[in-house]
Image 1 (cartoon, rainbow, N blue to C red):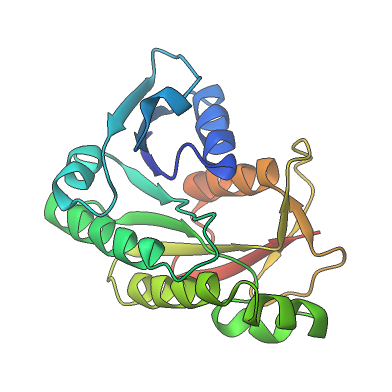
Image 2: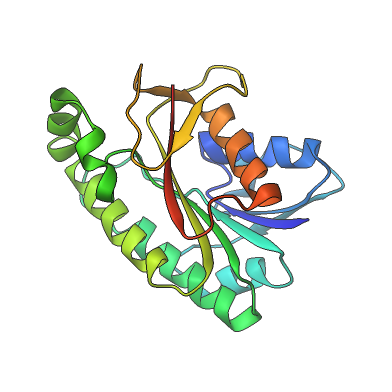
Length: 206
């Protein structure tokens, strides 16, 4: 399968690139800084660009079978990069006739807000307020896209090794409020193969 990955140099994106290549997929990694990609593989193509630039986004999307959006931002100030970038990705997919889209947001977004503990609600609504607003806008754009989309909402992300063991479902509660980025990547690749959650927003947690 040909997969374009946006946010490929983020911690989740790197795991996704690595695991996709291990499974034999052809990967196009969209990056702003190619020096941040340390993986070398004959099935890996790196496209340099800005997700806010529709032309470079369209270049990465062309001829793909599926697109994964794992855009993020480390800035706690107000940001719209996820929503605006995802809108550009969706437009490019429409132009090139590509239907399958998977987008990583966060547990607590949309209908999953009520699955958070009071502590996590406070944390998400205050310190991560800008991130939450960007994720909310991003999900709204995805749901209105007309594509075959799946939204993945991880609980608190960690850098622990992949286990392949986790809970997945719509608006489920978390036991530990943690999930390894490697397991998020594992779920994304399984969903690309199985298409079990098309037009659904699912939580992945432990």
